[in-house]
Amino acid sequence: MPQKTIPAIVLLLLAAVAAWWFLQNPLKTSTVQPLAEKPEGVFYLNPTERRTPQAQAFIHGQSPTQRQVGWVKLPKVPPPRDANSDPTSAGYLGTDACAECHQDYVNDFQKTAHFHTSQEAQGDAVRTLLEMNRDTLVTAGGKISFQMTPDNGKFSQHLVVKAKENTFSQHFTMDLITGSGKLGQSYLYWNDDHLYQAHVSLFHDENGNRWMNSPGFPDGGADYSRPIEQRCLDCHATFFQWVNGTVNQYRPDNYVLGVSCEKCHGPGKQHVDFHHAHPEADESHHITNPGNLPTERLDDLCSLCHAPAKRLKKPPFSYRPGDNIDDFLEFEQDPRALQGGVHSTNQRLRLSQSACFQQSEAMTCITCHNPHQHERGNSALFSQRCMQCHESQACGKFTTLGKQIEQNCIDCHLPRREDEGTQMNVAQGAIFPLLRDHLIQVYPEISSQVEAQLLTN
Ligand code: HEC
Ligand code: HEC
Ligand code: HEC
Ligand code: HEC
Ligand code: HEC
Ligand code: HEC
Ligand code: HEC
Image 1 (spheres, protein in one colour):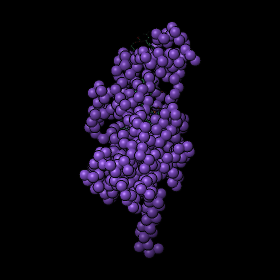
Image 2: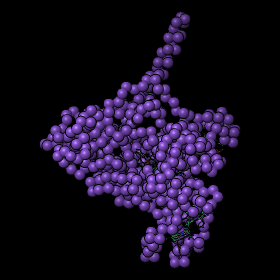
Image 3: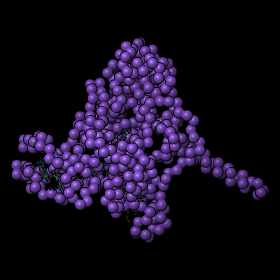
Image 4: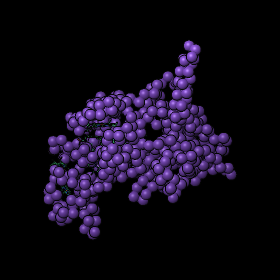
């Protein structure tokens, strides 16, 4: 073989591998196309138009045209992609990589809210959405509505604007889902490699699922311009590679969704590599067991996402289990903020005001919650956990209600209450989700209601 053909063959092979890799990992580019024609009477709020006095008057309700049609906000045209940002996975592998050796954990964990708290908007996750009876959200004026439609295995929010005799529409393909759906879901989409929240979210309560304007979005318009800042993903994902200095630009090809095993145990690459190389080793290496950390550090792990922060000191994506949370966040101390909290992420602070927490040695979140199991709704199981420290006879209600209280300590002592920190606006007015208050104490009024129900049953 001539001397020069060997390097040429090597180069060709490399090119083929690179091409194959690219085909397997295409960069996502579902760039938004503006409406072909601008409907008359609709304020089409692209970033330049949004600042005009007419547009401002319109948004603030001083313009008569508002009642005629509505407004549509679109995201900025993204700046060119930064070609130099290298993909790094920071050593995260995703939950699938743990299944080989921890199958039982993975099977159970896949049923939890943490696992589902962010996922790709495709497959089963989307099928159930599209099977909902109502596929349309109509805003108060009736001129602007949204239709949820299947879209090549994903789903689209189809914005429909009725202006005079004409109807205009534009569709946005959803890429990611945040929220397991217990309370609701919000949908995110990529505009090139910038991440945005869609206008329509899902709300879930005892009446089932319904579509609504995303939390905090006013009714009567369409807003597809809210950037998804890192903070959102800090709490709802395991890893995203943010492009430094931007608001919402991320590598679209190396994120790890869900609050997965590695969020609580640290990146798994070294651990997995070690145990592959040493199949005989039965002691773990290069992985954190939060159960072996000092109590404060275990608390810190859950507090990363379950306590309201006033200020960030370091990017929460750089936090690893075992780190001191005070180096990353400054917690909210204002008592008013502690009542409701950023969509009730205040469990840590409310709990810490409870006598149970203050007067026992080492109460942590895992005294009552097993992070590997889906236990929601199992009141009897949670009541067992109360009875690790309390006898049911110690409860004043034991005399009237007897042993049946052992089935449900929680509706009286950790009641569900409206979270006023999370407001959703629907055509009929504002609604708030119901969340558990982790301030464990005696709630006389709520207790009487629960007691009355128990006595009539
Ligand atoms: C090739 C096998 C293998 C894979 C893959 C693997 N582990 Fe392990 N892991 C082990 C072994 C062996 C142990 C020690 C015995 C035990 O506790 O089961 C262990 C223990 C652990 C422990 C307990 C540590 C302690 O100190 O108590 C955690 C937590 C853990 N693994 C997390 C993970 C996570 C998260 C993943 C996925 C990213 C993962 N493991 C993937 C083999 C593996
Ligand atoms: C990276 C952020 C993050 C960390 C760390 C975290 N959580 Fe969560 N947790 C969430 C999010 C987000 C949800 C909401 C999930 C959903 O329904 O979409 C949640 C939900 C929960 C729920 C409700 C589950 C349900 O089915 O209703 C419990 C309980 C919980 N977390 C406990 C814990 C405990 C205990 C720890 C610490 C060991 C912890 N979390 C650590 C983000 C986190
Ligand atoms: C400080 C952490 C934190 C931040 C920041 C945060 N969330 Fe959450 N989010 C939570 C927790 C914790 C819950 C679960 C509350 C519960 O179960 O009581 C939750 C619940 C939700 C739910 C409902 C999930 C369900 O149970 O069905 C959605 C949807 C959601 N968040 C979306 C978002 C979006 C979108 C953003 C950014 C704009 C965001 N969150 C920012 C922690 C956070
Ligand atoms: C929300 C945080 C969280 C998530 C997510 C999580 N774990 Fe854990 N894990 C913990 C905590 C806390 C402990 C310590 C429990 C204890 O000491 O009771 C633990 C303990 C363990 C242990 C050691 C068991 C033992 O007996 O001490 C293993 C193994 C483990 N986890 C594997 C996993 C795997 C695999 C996943 C994903 C499928 C996972 N964990 C997801 C928080 C988490
Ligand atoms: C780790 C032990 C522990 C666990 C678990 C525990 N508690 Fe407590 N609780 C205490 C201690 C200690 C006190 C303070 C002394 C007392 O009143 O008995 C307390 C106090 C209380 C009080 C009186 C509060 C007040 O303000 O006077 C109520 C009510 C209560 N607990 C209910 C519960 C319920 C319901 C659960 C389960 C969801 C629970 N506790 C779980 C240890 C615990
Ligand atoms: C129907 C509502 C209800 C249920 C169910 C209930 N409690 Fe209570 N609990 C109360 C009320 C109300 C009081 C205050 C009674 C009084 O002062 O006479 C109380 C008092 C207590 C106290 C004593 C607080 C103090 O004064 O120090 C404890 C501890 C307690 N409950 C624990 C429990 C536990 C554990 C369970 C489940 C096994 C439970 N409760 C179930 C309503 C309830
Ligand atoms: C004394 C027991 C106890 C402790 C300690 C405890 N929780 Fe809970 N938690 C509960 C109970 C009971 C529920 C209600 C479960 C249900 O509805 O099925 C709950 C529900 C939750 C939910 C879901 C809230 C909702 O409104 O649906 C989250 C999130 C949560 N806990 C997080 C935490 C975190 C984080 C910690 C530690 C700071 C913690 N919990 C400590 C008993 C406890």
